[in-house]
Structure formats: C-alpha cells, structure tokens
Image 1 (cartoon, rainbow, N blue to C red):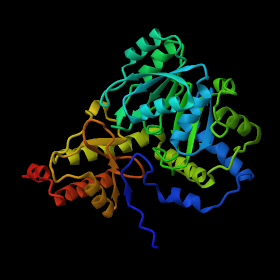
Image 2 (cartoon, one colour):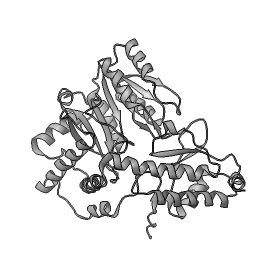
Image 3 (cartoon, rainbow, N blue to C red):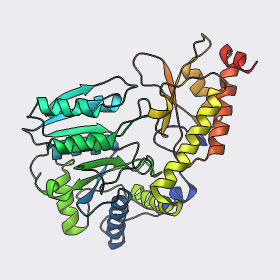
Image 4 (tube, helix red, strand yellow):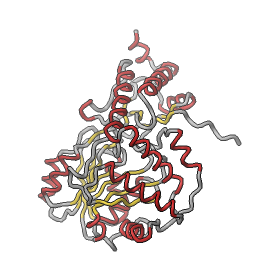
Length: 376
C-alpha cells in the first residue's frame, strides 16, 4: 500500500507545518542514556525556560505524550488531594480540565462564561473570596475552541492577591503570545512541543516553581505522570525515568534554535499576527464572518461561521481542501456551526493568502452562493 502524500500545509493548532530543518533533526537515532542526549535534554529545558524569562524560580519538567498528558500531570502533581481547583471555562479546553479533575477525584468548581467571552478577572476575585477552600486556579491562555485570548496578566494579579496558586494552560500560546514569569505570579505553565514552537507532537512540558514542585512529593495519582518524581530523577541523573521520545526532543531543540534565530517570542508573534490579518482580510472580503472581534482574537486559529447555504458541508470542504494540500480544523462551538483555520506553524503571509484562495475556490466549487454573490 502506498503511503499518502504529506499535505503541504496544516492549517490547524497542532500538529503544525514544520520546517525542513526541524524534520531533518529527526534523522539521527539517540540512546536515551547517552551523555549527548542528556546534554540535549538539559539544553532543551534551559531554552524553554528562557522563552518565558524565568527569573530563576522555575524549573522545566518534560514529559512524554501530548499536551493533555502534561495538563493532567500538572493538576495531579500540584493540586493536593485535599485541595480544590477553580477552573476558568470558556471553551473545550477548560472543560477538559474539569473532566481531568473528575477522573482524578480532585475537588473543583467551575467559573463558566460564554465561548466568545474572555474570563472576567473580577469574577475570579469574587469566586476566590467566596470559597476559601480553593487552593489553585486553572486558566487557559488561548482557548482554541474559538481562538480567544484570555486576560492572563489580570487573572494572575487577582489570584496572587487572594493568596492562591495559578496553573496556566499555555498549550496554544507558548512562544507566540507574551507570557513572562518575571512579570506575573504563576506556579506552573503547561505547553507542548507541537504548537507555536513549531516542533513535532509527542512531548509536553511544565515549567514549575521549584519550591512548590519539591513540596508536592506524594501528591500524584500516577507513577508515569508524577512531575515531582520526574524532576528529582532528572536533577539527580540527567535522565528521564522512562523511555523519552528522543526524536521529538531533537526536533524541538532544533525548532527552538530557529525560534531564537527568528527573534524569539516577539518575532514569532509578529509573523503569526501578519498571517492572521492576511487570512481575515481575504476571507472577510468574500462574506465569511468570524466568531470573535479583533480585540479578543489571538493570532493562533480563526473560527469562521459556516456559510448559511445548503450547499455548504464541512466534510466536503475538508476533503476538497485536503486534496489541494491544505488541512483545516472542524469547529468546536456547541451552539453554531463553524470551521477553524490555523495561522501558526512554519507559514508566512503569502502561504495564508494562497490558503484563502484555495478555500474560497473550493467553496465556489461546492456552489456556496453567498460567496459568488459577494464578488458581484
């Protein structure tokens, strides 16, 4: 059986289109106990801490698996079994944290707002004042259900004022949106290899205040997901406890080298913002409407309302666009039909302009009349 050709462009929030250099970094096989792999792990962790301007308080704990593995590991390790987590929910990924709490048996309370509405810091302050049992707060930096950018700095301030600990899911923002540990109080930041750093999927990581982490020994519900034990072993031996995804680490390390060459987070944000503006302008000019206004839109993934035309069908749009080398993402909103187009990865504004042309041409081929009429 012949393997299908790799799509040219992944217009998703991860996995992403990666550079040739990143893919080439996976050509070598590594022994996980080799000195040079131990050095690679140490260098990788150092570079990840530099992304968020670590003031010297936090350490990096890498973990096998997707980002959700790291989220579950962080909650299970950092939230005591007799603790309570306030989960800020305005999309699917906040809801996923709630499900993790349910599975782990951790006490939690939800602060829910609409999927197109950012978290209200004053509502967070009120919830904390009303419930002294809450020990931790979990916030999503960029909620990729819609592409919503939550006000992390303001949330961090009220959490600190209330004397609680903040856990940030920065899965779809890390390396692109500003997040500086020398400016905000944050116990832990969670992210993964296959997002805005433009590595490949397979490794999560948590940047944790070292004092808090060392105090968490015995909290975890799991051997494999125990971040405290993982860190102690790394600190002692330089080695992972269990077989690491060696090729994924090598690819991420190379991706971080390119990240630094590009100019770090400010440059990555600027490129993604230009991609986002290009996509929005091209699609909007032909009648496609977005869920979010500019003020709330992170330049990560754009959620478009599905055309109100019986000729529209997402599966058809997806299949036809994929045949042309462009892979979309389905919508996640529960009340209205949408589709999502990512603007991150090893892509430039010209790539997004071409992607827009392909999507619009495909919708025309499907007979979606509102697009044809919008050009008249």
